[in-house]
Structure formats: C-alpha cells, structure tokens
Length: 324
Image (cartoon, rainbow, N blue to C red; front, side):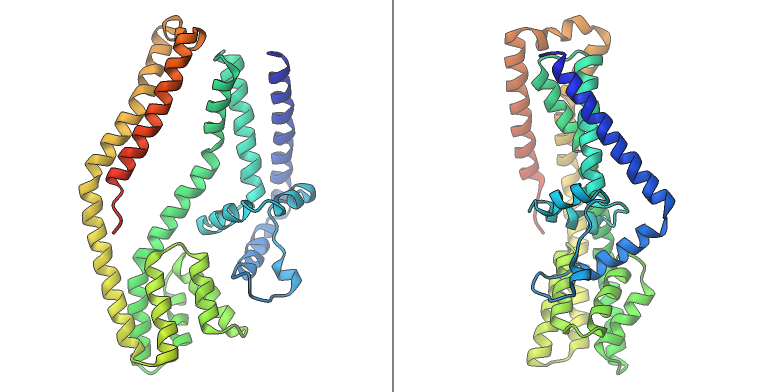
C-alpha cells in the first residue's frame, strides 16, 4: 500500500507535467492565441440571459479538448473562470487546475517520500494546502485589481460628470473615461461601451459591468444611472455626489483598516507561530518532533491542534473583519 500510493502519485504528476508542457508549447508557438482568446472571452462575458451568437458564447477553459468538455460540465468552474477574469490572468482556467494538481502530486511525493511524513493522510492534507497556491495567487491578483478599480472609480465619475455638464452624451463621457484611464477601469468601461455600441441597452450593459467587476461601490453608480434613465434628473450632479460618497467611504475604510492592522498582525503571528516552531524543531531535532507523527497520542494532538488553529484563525478573522 505504501508503494502503490507514491507510484500512482508519480504517474499523475508525470501526466500533469506533460499537459503543462503541452500548454507552454502551444502558447510559445502561437503568441497571438492569448490575445485572441482574451478578446473573445471579454466579448462573451456577460449575463446569462443575453442572447449572443453561439460562436461568442462558447467558453474555452482548457486547450485540451477532453479536459475542456469535462470542465464545462462542472458548475463550480464558473466561479473559477470569473475569478480568473477578474484577476486578468493570462492563461485559461484549465491551466490553473492542472497546475494545482501538479502542486498536490509533487507536494505529496515530497512530504511522503523525501520528508517521510506519516501517516499518508497528513501528507495528503499538506499537499492539498500546497495545491491551493495557484488559486490563492488568482485571489490575491483579483483583490489587487479590484482595489485599483475602486480607487479609480471616483475620478472616472468626476470626469464623466464634467463631460455631461459640457453637453456630451452618457456614452461619450464613458468613452472619455475609457480613454483616459488604464486597466482596470479603462478596459471595463471600454467593454461596456462596445456592448452599447453593438446594440445592447445601457441598463443591460451596466448590469454586465457589475457582473464582471467585484466592486460594491460600482453598484451605486449603476443603480443611479438606471433610475435616472427611468425617472429623470440631473445625472451630472448625481454622479458627482456618488463620486464624493465613494471617495469619503474609501477614506473611512482606510482609517478602519489602519485601526485593524494591529489585530490582523497578531492573528497572523499567532497562526503561523505553531508551524514556525514545528519547522525549527524539525531542523534542529528531527527525531524529537517526529514523535508527534509516529505515536498515536502525537497524531491525536496534531489533529486537535490543527482544529484549534483553524477555529482560532476563523474567530480572529471575524473579530478584525469590519464591514464598511
């Protein structure tokens, strides 16, 4: 049994590495493929109720046809695909899934064979945690991009309001914002403007913008524009007021974040400290720390400790996570 599991893991890792090399070869052979796929994905991203040609509605989650068919049948892949789009990642979702599987297989082999961490399910748990690194990278990149969008939004709304006061149409103001600002707000506004120019209604195009971008402040702008088109009013003044509200909310969020910094740092230190001590003991005295993984009492203590660490991290996160 101990030989069978590493053998299967080695075979899986080898297959996944071949798939990743296949990905790299395809992208190096045709570098324009990335740009074309990205443009088609942006065109096809939108609400499910929008009727688009079948060619534009097809999503490519993997360059491997069989893997692409499998991923399209999995409902949760839509969340990953949306996360990848919001992070503006270069490669398709299937690449990150294969990369995560490679990390899991390689980490399992490393923990189980090289470091000889037993039992196998403990190595499996550590390998699964290692496999989450590609998705954590996407989540981090997405948060960074959405924060930049939130910081750009008030200035873009002010520019659109000045354009409306000068007598320009709403689409012209959005065009100015798309031209003046870089990614992400320039890119997303440009996509919304293209949808409007191709015949999609302004409310539907703005709703698609909300679906693409994970920014709560954007809802104020979209709802205000939709209501103004139905009930009337001074849109320029409304947009200036929204920009002021978002700017003040952003400043208040910064103050709250500063006050929460000490609590977050304490939570991070308390969560990492047990693993850091275990790693130091593993380097200094491997036979001493390995008792926790070989004896039954040690295994029980490790399991209880991991559960308590997870509960403590969750509680500390809830304490310092203040919604603004």
